Length: 480
Image (cartoon, rainbow, N blue to C red; front, side):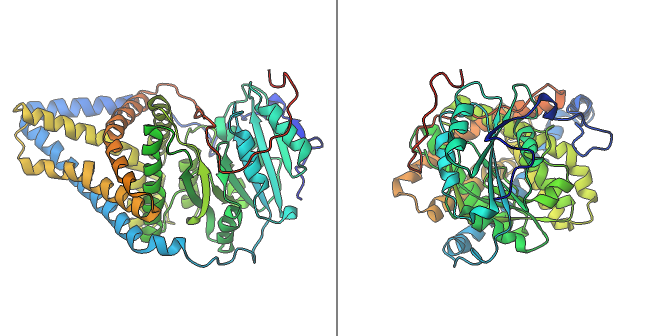
């Protein structure tokens, strides 16, 4: 087993100085200004002036026309992904297991944990069951300043299992998930880094399936498929279960099949260590380090691959409040990545025009519900006689809200071979999409105004597990 450099004990506490360092000038992780309030002001002034000089009806008509174009593009994109997945995804899921044993580079598995006592035992059990040569594998779990029994549970596991290394970050170290992963990155020597989240329980073959793609030197990162394991816990969990079927079996598969541009998803993902170090590690100044890393990998001239057979089981949020917090973080980070990277993305010599357009559409995904809200507002205004728009102008809005996403969701259910009555779960997307409109709108306004926001972990319930857990005994009072 490759040793963790500088680590001589099973549980290592990092000093406060090992927290996120200050960004030097020119550092790729230097925090970019968050707010764009002048842009919001320009939008408001532009709309007001256009309404004054051209009339409100004509101005709203132009806005409706722009929305029509955007919605039509995304409808075609949804449909293309659905057709590709319906035609080839199931075949690829059942394809022969090629190259699972002939290529075994050294791998370091990283997991960041903060107050994860409800799920940490299942996660560690699944990591220890991974099918990979022991002398080529290092397991590193970072206790990110937990104030529950997470740290004590991890130390108990490490005392029993020599394959596991535990790093303890002091409270207030900063950087969120990125900071925890970067601390682990600096202490481990391996060719490939694989990341799971604390609630994840990977299939034993997941590592082999992920790393086989790195034979190709152009591959900088690989994403696997995440499956929700607690879809019956609540109506919200059921909705997220179908959402993940669509997202991984249709959307990401479609991006791979049509453009070879899937995203590094942040968990159940692998990245070439030389690529990661060359890019300066994970960005601690973003709350969506996965999207950020995806863009930096692409602009560095390497590619991301997607393997839908590399399966990992995770826990869905079970309440609307947790859904709000999770999706707000995703929207806020995704929107910031668009503001930060769209210009260098357009100048990148490593992407074709079509690839730049698709990557831009991917970055704008968390703007689409916001645009849908504007479209709904135009519909309401038209109902009250404001905005002289013909009915035909509203049809693309209907395609976006229902037909396009519904096609992806339906194909996801078919490929996932879920039970027939699960089709009723599609109805849960009506309130979920309405909630998403409000979440993305709030995230956009907050981001443009520069309101402060830091990485917030998703709460877990620990209600279900895919593995049989036999946790070690934790000393009484540990973690208190």
